[in-house]
Structures are given as C-alpha cells and as structure tokens.
Length: 474
Image (cartoon, rainbow, N blue to C red; front, side, top):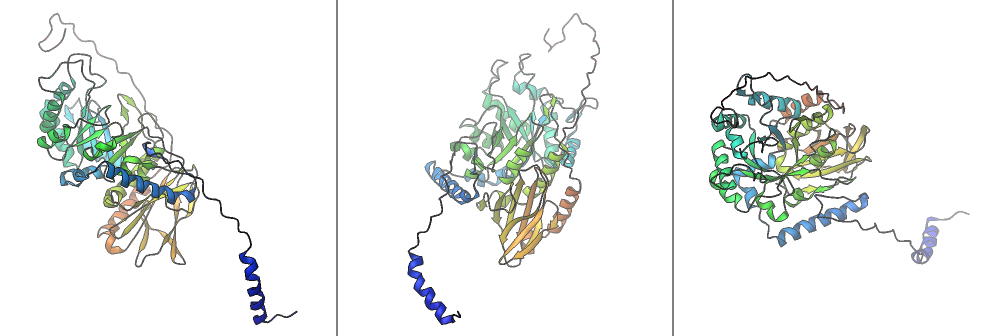
C-alpha cells in the first residue's frame, strides 16, 4: 500500500508517545579508578574512558596541594637557575675513568669526553663528578680530600670544570653524608662543601643517598656562587620541591598505561633524571622521561663495572634530546595534557601547548613496529604538521574539521609530532629538521647489550723500601 509523505509523518507522530515511554538501558558508568598521589609515578587507569577524569583529578590534587603547602616557585623563576629545567641529560662520571683522565698523558680529556657524549647520546647537559666511593675509608682521607687529591689538585680540577663550561656542560660535585669515620675537617661538612663549590666553580650538588639537603644549604650556596642547584638521589618531599631544582627518578615503577611523574606534575620546572643503573634495557626509563617531558641519567661505568647502553637506547636518546632542548618552554609550561586520545593500541601520547605550537610526545609500549594513523587532532588555520623524529613534514590527512597524523614508531620506540605556523616554529626550524634527518639516519634498533671485553693488567712489582716517604702511611 502506497503511503504519502503526509501520512508517514502522521503515523510517526502517533508513535512518539510510545517511544518516549520505552525503557532505555543506561550506559554503565566507568568503574572508579584508584588515584594514588603517594607514588613517585602516579599510575594511570587502563581504560581510556577514564583518562579525562584522571586528568581532572590530577589537576585538582595539584591545585589543592600547592595551596595547602603555600607553595612558591620563586626560585625556579630566577635567571641563574634557568639552566636546571633544560638539564635533560646528565652523565654520571667517575673521576678515575680513563675516558676522563688520561694518566699516560697526564691530562683531563674533557673535549674528547664531551664529543663522545654528543656522538653517542646526543650530548650531555651536565656531569656528576664522582670522586671517592668505593675507595673512601681505606685510609683517613675524607670525601673533600679526594677532590683535593685529584691530578693537578683543586687548580687542575677547576681547569677541567671550566673546560666543561666552555662546552656548555654544567658540573655537579658529590656529597656523601655517610662519610663520618674518616678524618674530620676543621669546618662543618656544609662549610667544606660550599668552599669546594666556590673553589671549583661547580654548578650543582648531588646529594648521595639523600632526598633533600638541610634547610641551610640554599642560603649558603647562594652566598658562595649563583645558580648552584641541589639534586637528591631520592624523590624530594613536596614541601622541599621549592628549593631543590632536580632529583633522581631511580627505579621508579610505572603503570602499563604511562603514569605521571608526581614531582614533575607538581612543579613543571623540576627536573627528574630517570635511572636504573644496572639495567641493560632503558626503554622504560626513556619512555617515562619522554612522555613526562623529563630527563635521563647516563651511567655506564657503575663504580668500575661496565654497563653499556644498547644501540637502540642510544638512538632514542639522540633523537629526543634536540627536541626537548628546543621546546623546553613547552615542556616546562602549564599547558600539559597527559594521555590524549590515540589511534593505535599500545601507543600513548602527551600534548604540550604554548607559543602558538602543539607538541605531541608518543611512546610505543609494544614490541612491534606500529605504522599508520597515530593522532586525530583539530585543524588550526595556517598550521603545518611535522614528524620531529624523522625531521620531515608529517603525513597529515584532513578528516572533516580534524586532521589525521600518521607515522611509524619502532618497537619500544618513541614518536613526536609538531603543529604550528611557520612564524611560530622559529627562523632556524628548517636547519633543525635537517639535523633531525641526520640523527634519524644513524638510528639503529639493535637491543643487544654491547660486549665489553675485560682484561686484567699485570701489576709490575715495585722496589721494597725500608723507609716510608713523607705523606704516606706505612
């Protein structure tokens, strides 16, 4: 039977009261997720539907905690401390390592060490000049004596520090609070440490085994030398983040879906260095650092044991460091959105916005290469899209009012997209992309641990002396 358009509309109108009374099954609410801000990495929920609520909870916790602590970020805003928030790559350097001191030639090989770091890891922003342990305690010398006894004395070490500075590398001194059984200084440990900082022109104090320094550290360091930061080996308590610009993120456990570094979220300028000194696979640390806009500790000579990085891990660090350094304002800014929607399972992303730019840092948690659409993002007038890992203009396909960003991320690898107008990318942006192309051409995803041969060197016998020379212990 033929039905007219008018008849169809009349029939439909008659059915509306029945349809409105039809019981509708409510969509089940997402189960509540556990939010644990006591963890060094605040774990993220597995269900993407819960990510918006997770972000809202993060923001509320941060605002409430900063208000409760009457938090001030004044020290982070001081010009002399600006370097700390861009201190992404720190090298743990044994002072006795032959890559640092050439005993045959009798000189410090600073230039060669810095060049090696640039070639293999993408360059060091700082070094920890480790000096005493594990030799500390074999005689009466204390930790300060070990700096004084380095080749050339304090004058020679200061020349080496100045060489690092000329290469744009900051230098930490090490403080061992547990050194209590050796010769005592006439001054207190803090006064002796401050004197070394002044004499060696150091830039930071690594607080071995400590999460924080004493309250008097900051004032005494400021009086000795501007811009000297404190970095704890443990996670800094929230009430001391204001005067500790950095900390180690040592052996932090992440959730399957990448979590959020608690201290980095609390204070965006605080630098944390991921470190698992004995591990041969650093992809977990690298991913945590990358998606949180934070840093890495490179430590291959662990108190005399060689723990070398794989070619894959070196490639990842080389690729991300130039991006982090260029976009530090974004990575330490307030417009950070963790866990934005992604198009591929096993891939996760953070969004960083500012200066007319959008930057996405991505990680591939799987052990497979992921290729194809990664992100669906809103189109912005005049914006172009770039894959910063490969140094190329990204594959961007319009989809309605959005654009799909596509690429390839190797197993356990990372990705990065940038969206912006040419005027906001910077005058030297094309040169930056060319350098990224060159870095990417060297990438290798061989995860095997490099084999480091160990060779015992016979010790030549020395002449037995009947007398003990002055200054030596018999």
